[in-house]
Structure formats: structure tokens, C-alpha cells
Length: 396
Image 1: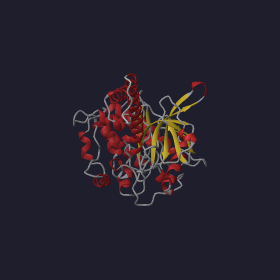
Image 2: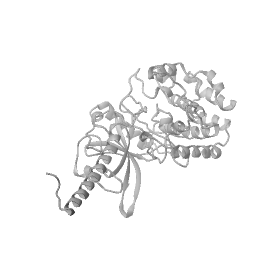
Image 3: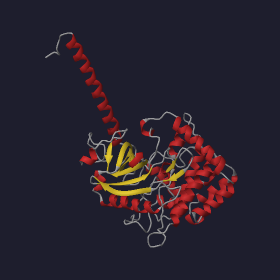
Image 4: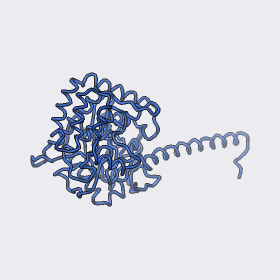
């Protein structure tokens, strides 16, 4: 993670009059044309902020601004990844994909402005459903509804053409509960195409290099092999297991052990213990086949099988999901999960989800420090007035 100056609210220490201008109404400062409100998360590659775009006549639009950090900006591969994320994001416009609104540069920093989703990630919802050490899943209806929305997003992304009209061959490579955002109404958004691959990408991942979250990788991805759309479908299957059980589908004492288990594939015998009927288990069995050739050939084929197994999940499923989201947002949260709105979480250079880091803490620390100084100054003024009225001065 890049180091940050304690006085800086945006990555790096380049400061200009525009970057330092405070705009009030709860904002920290402005970055380009965006008013930064708070840091959401920070990693080795970028920091994500909740922000606001203001215009004439009281116009306001909430956005998420992802800013490349200083250290990352000096790495050509990371800059290429950031630019590629912007390129593919600008071409993917679907109701179940978090949109990229703008790619630009302000105060010498590259940034992405993205759709702001007013709600938690799926991973946070599952975490908040735990009672003590007991995990609780979302149920088959909500699982089918949410998985269907993700499959709609993937079908669109996998089939999307590039500027030349030819398929871009997009493979997300990081489908997981952390990258599924949920708004308060139950709408579902797949986000973060930061490590996606395809014909459009300027840089290619070397054979044997593994990117993504180990616990949601297809066997071919975990071993550094060639991935395609079917690798994403496998990740959807693992995400469904997490939704049904409330637990990680693959676990281990460390990333290496989890990846070793991912390389072997999801144990078929574990399907029998899932809290769903045989029809859904059958769908999951094919989605989680160890050999890519034994899985569904496309997201649309997977979606069709899921709809046949769980008819009309939209009504009951969306309602159950919305209730789970409401419950998750009402429960007390620590500072790491306190933001009601969620943007795509930044990743480090290896594609791992990053935890909110020093820059997020800097925002809170600076605000707290200013508040304490003002309180202290006020107390001193009151003491001075009291002493003056009593005909005494401050001790020399």
C-alpha cells in the first residue's frame, strides 16, 4: 500500500488550488469536478471515494471515484490495467453492471468515476446474517434471483462486441460476493472488471500467473491455465454455494491451501448437503464440473437451466433479498463496513480485494483532529474571558 501524507485527503502529495478547495456541505475537498465526501477503501493499486458531482440549479449526482495511487502510477503494468478497466467499463452498459462514467486525469492523478450503488456488497450481507458462529444463507429463492441477475450481466459482457464489431471475449475472472453490489431495493450490480481479460486488453496475463480470489476460482484458473467464459460460470456456482450456506465454499488456513483446493474442484459430494431441492443441486452440479467442457457452454444456458429449476424467483426472491439487505444495513457496523453506499472495492496488483487502509483512516483522523483543536481553542477563550473579568491575566 502506498504511503500517504497525513495532511493529504487524496493519494499523493501533489496539491493545487483546485485540489485543496473545500466546498462545504459535508465534503472533504474537490478532485477535478468531483466533491470528495469520504474514503470507502484503499489498496495497493487505488483508493475509492464516495463523491458528488454538482451542477447548476442544485443538481447533484452521487458517484464513486477511484483514484490511482502514487506508487501504482509508477508501475506501467498497473497503469495499463487501470486504463483497460476504463476501456471495457465504458463499453459495458447493462442494468446489472456497475457503470464506468468517466476516465480522466486531475491534479496529475488518473481516476475512474463510477456509478455509486447505495447499498452493501453481497459479502457484507452474508457476514451480517451470521448469528454468533452460526452462518445463515439467503435461501433458494433469493439465491436464484441474485444469481440470475449476475448471469444476465455476464451474458451481456461475454457477448459484447468491441469498437470493430467483433466480440471482445470478456472474462471477468473475479466473480465473487465481494464484487456483487446490492442497492436497498434489491437491485443487483456486478462490478470491478479490473482484472478482466479479453481481446481488448492492451496487456496480456502471462501463462502461469494467477489473478482473482482463490476461494472463487475455477480449477483451470487456480492452476494458471487458460480461462474463458465458463470459468466465470464456475465462479457463479461457488457464489451460489456461499449464498445458500452463508459460508465460504472453499476454505483453508491460507491462500495457498485454498488455491490448492480450488485446483481440485468443488467436491461433488458436498452438493448433497446444500439447503435446496434436487433441481437446484442438479444445476449447481453442472456449473461446478471440474472440466470446463462439462459445464454450461454459456451464461444464457446456465440462466435457462436455473429458471427451469426455480420458476419465477423475481417476486419472492427479490423480496427476500431486499429484506436481507435492510437487515444488514440496520445492524451496527465497525468503521470498515460503515459506509452505507458501496463502490467497487480496489485491488492490489495481484487482483486481491484490498481492505480499507491508511488513507481512509487519514480522513477520519484529520476530521477528528480539527474538531478537537476547535474544542480546545474554545475552552482557552472561555478561561481567558473568565480571568479577564476577574482582573487576572494568563500565567506568563
